[in-house]
Amino acid sequence: MVSRKAAAMAACVLAILTSCTALDDASGPCPKSSTTVRAGDLHGDYQGPHGMRFTLGQASTQYPEGRTAQVGTVRVKKWVISLEELGENGPAGKGFQGEGTWEFRKEETTGGEEFRQIKLDFLRGTPEQRMPTEPQYLGIGGTRNKPELFVETDPDTCPSIVFHR
Image 1 (cartoon, helix red, strand yellow):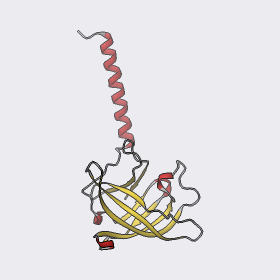
Image 2 (spheres, one colour; image 1 turned 90 degrees about the vertical axis):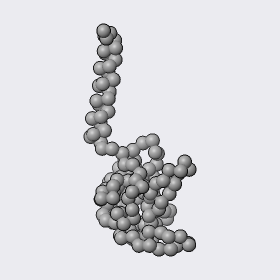
Image 3 (tube, rainbow, N blue to C red; image 1 turned 180 degrees about the horizontal axis):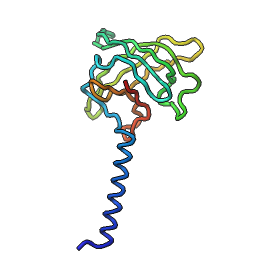
Image 4 (cartoon, one colour; image 1 turned 45 degrees about the vertical axis):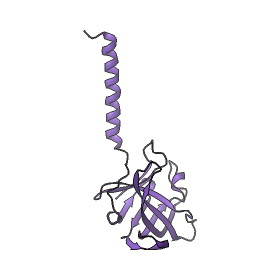
């Protein structure tokens, strides 16, 4: 026979698990890095938090610095100077609007795990605004038909900046 204390404990655990599941369903799963999405799958329009938008042009093969790279054009609107510093209220002011290039990158962690990312470099923008001078990196997740791009600052938490096509 089950004691009242054990039954109460089981009820508490069930309540906690149920509330966590409901929270997960409401907020959606965290984006996970994908090794199946290819450069050719990424072109198109993306929207993110605070009205941030960008368009990735079709990638083509280039040979910079003696290596092969998939590179395309990017146009951004309401972009922040540094994605890692984006606050809850969005970019300060109107955000950056401009153009540059994106590069598809296959990388590996120190533990040997493969992951994909894109590197954004900005070449020109609206004259009244500062332009990001440092490259910015977005992780690649989702599927080949429905890719997601995200900023991963801490692998133990969900990214707060996710872009969907």
